[in-house]
Amino acid sequence: MEVARVEADFIVIGAGSAGCVLANRLSANPKHKVILLEAGGRDLNPWIHIPVGYFKTIHNPAVDWCYKTEPDPGLNGRSIEWPRGKVLGGSSSLNGLLYVRGQPQDYDRWRQMGNTGWGWDDVLPLFKRAECNERGADAYHGDQGPLAVSNMRIQRPITDAWVAAAQAAGYAFNPDYNGAVQEGVGFFQLTAKNGRRCSSAVAYLKPAKTRPNLTIITHAQADRIEIADGCATGVTYTNRSGQQQTVTARREIVLCGGAINSPQLLMLSGIGEPEQLAANGIEVVKSLPGVGKNLQDHLQARLVYKCNEPTLNDEVSSLMGQARIGLKYILFRAGPMTMAASLATGFLKTRDDLETPDIQFHVQPLSAENPGKGADKFSAFTMSVCQLRPESKGEIRLASSNPRTYPKIVPNYLSTETDCRTIVAGVNIARKIARHAPLTSKISEEYRPHADLDMEDYDATLDWARSNTASIYHPTGTCKMGDDADAVVDSKLRVHGIKGLRVADCSIMPEIVSGNTNAPAIMIGEKASDLVLETV
Image (cartoon, rainbow, N blue to C red; front, side, top):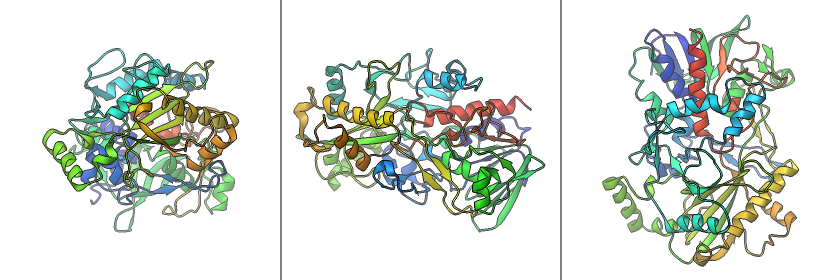
């Protein structure tokens, strides 16, 4: 698409979970001219819009950046995959569709860290404004927003049995983990409507894309933010023909590239740690040592149990089974193709002295060596458990001044005693739940880890975790919000020391939220749009 104009009031960089929100909200007033830049293409791949399609889209370089971490000592030297969306909708077009906000205490901690306006009472109205929940409106939910949230349109006996076994193990049933309390076990809601994915692009961009004051430019990878006299003035990007073009902002630029791309672009633009910029031949425009630091992610241990009855593995193992699944979706928008990344969930405590849950379960009626690479050839289900609030912090490091060179991702997993003990406790809780009825009667073999792994052997369990855990794809924190020496943006998301530039995505989280990150990213987009519009 050719650029219709090279000047606008607002430039939004990145059409992901938050960027699509901003493009919609800022262009709602026809007086505001808005340009939205997206490095990827349009969301035309049909698998994007079918909920189970994430098995086809992640690891696909046409829509996924296909990042990999540096070898990590905390993972016994392994390098692991970090999918990130490179398409309209960003990672909300590739993710597992799970609608999770986190705990009220997460946001109250943000406020206590000096970020006025980010407490739970401040952000709950934004979550509700964004949401159109099929259950209807109440004190915690909205039903008039653009983001469709629905119940699962599929049930499977093995996940129902997991929820029952968890209750038998002493954990309470919770019908709404986004309601009054998060703690308990139950079933996920997902960002979908009528059996189709509701990405941020579908929810926010589709209704706005025909506005004459909104220009959406795809295949436009930002090379740098132009800064003059301490003020962000424009963005230089490379178009799909390989030519550089510059668009100018009369009012503001909002960077929504995510926890990897946002710090990378700031550093490419001369904003960051001076030593790192100098090492890559980049002139320092503003010294902000915290750019790229404070990286946090949720690390998951995936336990697999073989079953003595069929699971979804069996349903997809034959062409006939696949045909039945496809036909059910085509005719009724129901069945396995409507499934999110997991069906059942649990937010639990590993210790009685904790105020709120510190681990989360994702339970799937299938198993696979790697999501996106096909189901195993035997009957099985998966219990994934992750630590909700890791202490370990890594960083994004610039590898080159070339925007096409991927930055180095250094996650630094399992580098604190708390994190190690929590992942071991989570694995052990998962194994204990599996030993309760009615789940235990459905299990034929403890496959991963094998039953030979002694639950009382802390060191062996930790070593298994280091060798077998993977990211659950929730990178955050690399453009931290706050007013301390390591902060990158203030509580209004303005980059410290640079006028006319904000960051609005999961990179601004001072601490990772206690749950999946897509809903919070959309909330951040809603909050950012309010902050920008209150100045015009």
